[in-house]
Image 1 (cartoon, rainbow over the protein chains, first blue to last red):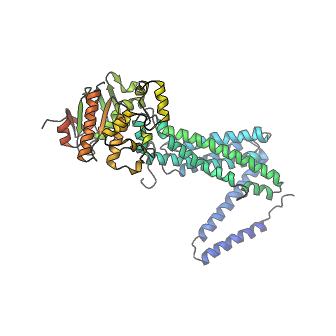
Image 2 (cartoon, one colour):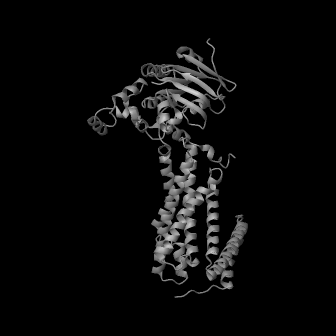
Image 3 (cartoon, rainbow over the protein chains, first blue to last red):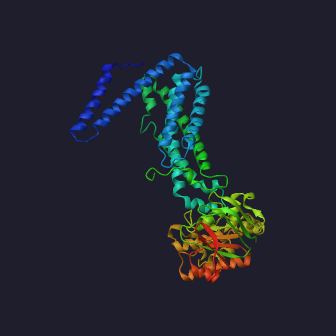
Length: 269
Length: 227
């Protein structure tokens, strides 16, 4: 088994199918043909660019270039987390809490996987580092975004019940405990579901890719397992860190609920 | 019980407020809605950022951890918050002082076995507000606004605060329940000597109960002239 390279003709053929879909949308007045074409063009450009960048990167193995790419990935992911918040924290915290907890979880787990588990030499070899980090960032990103959004939204809506507990002498962490638990749980559910249904309902993308690229299925399955466990750990760690920092930021030293530290909701502003 | 003293306290909307309420005294605060009555009470309880100092007796607020402080100055907000499904969990917590004087160890064991009927004191308190002990099993959603208001005051008094800050404590009550609440507060103030600061827009209530009265005029808290 080995990789069959794809030629321009093969891709053109596949792209023709998308054109066909766009034509169908036009014929049936679905009104999404423009969006289909734009999205297809975007993914073409983005993926080819990524391919080019990785090609250069793999040849040089320059640690600084790799660090730069990793940093770009992290900052985009941090941006994405912030954009998904209905009520984000004001000031640098809005970006900082999400980005730093992702940095903490994704980077530490990637490094752990590369040095201890897979044992890559040198550990920053981009062929392993970049895809691993990408998978981890992509998944911790959505977990953290969901968890943080749940925290801030519920805190804003539940001001009465939080302050009722504060008034009866609860500390800030007692007063927010149930909301915090709730937010954390909702952040973890997607990855738990993904683990539970993997291999039965869905063939995970990475495993599919590896099998297509000619890896033995058992090897592909083992890598997929590794990735899934890493993602679960990374999402958990990242969400816990984000929720802890976020809920701490919602209160000040005198255990007051400080909703003024949140920007107003999207509709209201 | 200690007196309540505000020293250059600066809530939002108000000029600095200084006043002293002796132990066992009842003070009313009135003023048009939106004038800052609630904000004044919230500032005393340290629920909003504010400058200035508050004393309970000799003890300065800044020298006490915020949760302890709030347990001592007992604020009843105009709208009560409920965090659990049924009423009982809202009565779960005792003030540290009350817990220590609560009785011998074997009594505690008995409490754990019969958590609901544990406390005659709690039953008596609830009855004074017009509830039977089974109210603890009610779901919060079932409660009317007036029931919530009375239960909120009950759960506050259950913690034995040293002072009381009441924000429109009888606003949603019918005359009978209003009298009941007034009687409980009066009793608590007299027997325990707690300073009570009551924000109320009801002039008759002030005339009926009041010792001292202040009114908020143009962002200032000024003594109200007698009628």
